[in-house]
Figure 1 (tube, one colour):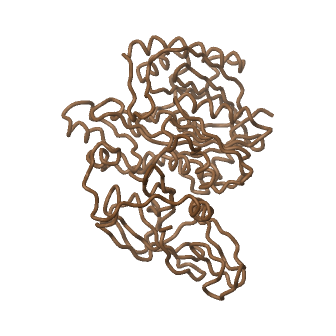
Figure 2 (tube, one colour):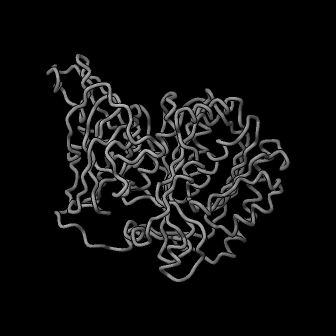
Figure 3 (cartoon, rainbow, N blue to C red):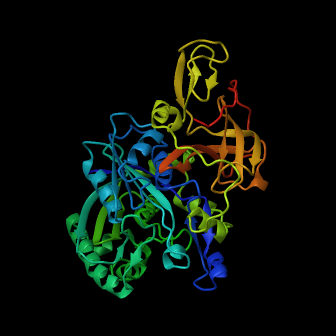
Length: 494
């Protein structure tokens, strides 16, 4: 059996920046559409965690390897993939590797995952967060997002049947270490370089798969050089109906994650036996040919039953009232006065490691004697006082209800005010945590929430990650009460 994609997951941030908001402030530039914006407490690591959670939401066997690719890693000289590994609750034997640098590494990561099956199950996660200088095309046209694909043999919904590549050394887009914004060479030069490379890779992939242009049911062309992408798409020779719709108008160009999110969007609409071609332009060109299998409809139905959001649903759910000033502050281009509280301290490495299951995987403990659930986990039961009778329970994917909340205008935050909530989890357990992706006037006791992995703050170069609550979209305000007793609130402070 050929290597294939078993399941997938995508994540588009909640916030949208309208291009009209940029044009209104700067007085120039196109004003149509919007771009996806990662919140102030999100980075490429947290975006990748969210995509990975959705890829593993149906509960198949855990991966043997985790590959994480991003051009904007949270750390250098430290593996970011191990943070995703911990947050996803993967087995200790699962290897975790970073593939950073150019967006081209993203498609290479997916290719490695596909080629490693059926011998090993590999979770490939690609993530990107793109900014650009104020008023530039990158700021206006780019977007943030992530995609994840679990590749293996059993139950593959799309098999790899052909590939092609073309490489050349030329200067189109670059960023040296320490810079946050990319430089771009003159557009005509990039187009002249990319178009022949794309044609070579595309032709090689079709030859490898033994198919013709007319056999293609879905064609995806992505790249940060929009002029070259447009030229290549128009010359593929496939039917207009086969060209996958791009997401530029609604969420922007997602950079390294663009091909993965577009592929996921196609998989959520495709039929069995269809051929999908993914052509990516980034420092060369790479093309993959995938054939969907008879397992795809069952996977699509299972994802719908498990309430895993599709790409189309995430596009529609985005909130489009983010101000341009807030966007600039979140990206570090507008430095605002901080709250009158001491700056946060750097997390201690020994403490973080000792509490890894709680801090990263959000694992509580339930007393095996009386059933009382504890957050954070503890050895002694607060209800029946039994000692060392605890069973770990991962609550990252368990939803809850707001019992009460408070709004703090003095606590340290990159985007004040801080919203603190007490959450009653389904099945028991109560916890006090911070809330994100919420408008204060819309807060209400009884609202439904879910947990999300976020970067709490960065101090002395160390990122402090933990879990926050966020509103559950489309849920009833007042749910059924928990059937088991809840534990007492506890602080997120280490």
